[in-house]
Length: 71
Image 1: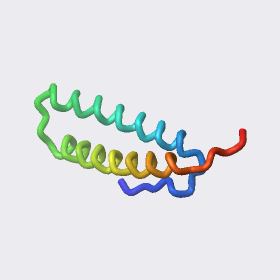
Image 2: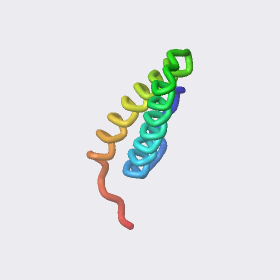
Image 3: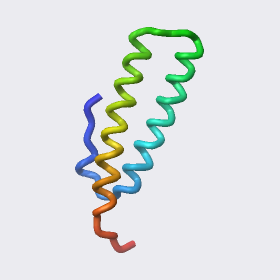
Image 4: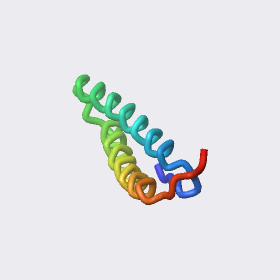
């Protein structure tokens, strides 16, 4: 999963979308762990979560310094 949100203007939406994806993947990871599944699927899920967390940190930093746009 290689993705960038650099072209998006609304940092809050970007952050919200990333949080939503992280929540979904976390739920999926819990389901896989509850099944006792130690497979490539679980490893891929954990790698995707890690990448999304880095993207979230970057998006949060950018949105914290973005000038407020007129509504």
